Image (cartoon, rainbow, N blue to C red; front, side, top):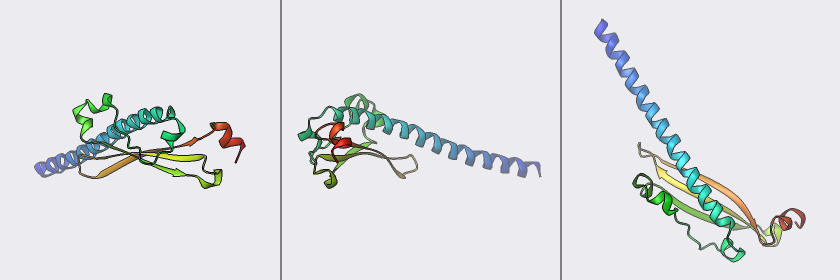
Length: 128
């Protein structure tokens, strides 16, 4: 009877540890993805209007992240741009997305969205 209880306890603890490692891996990858997105968003804030509104621009992961072998092959960065017609085409919505696979094989992603105006923030807030 004691062996049965011990086997049950060990099985339960191993399952709990596997779940904990999965959650830890997901949290670590979410943090890495957030850092990649923040780095790219800061780069794009410095773009001139022509480059910021260019839908064909394909971002790449910054070399400071790509140097790490644990990051370089696992994460991909993509960008989408939508022109907001309500603002006479002078405002674009930029969405950056990072995708990766967890160690359980499930596809995960995180994204940031920002708005870029041709005339700066004044044009966005005061000239609708």
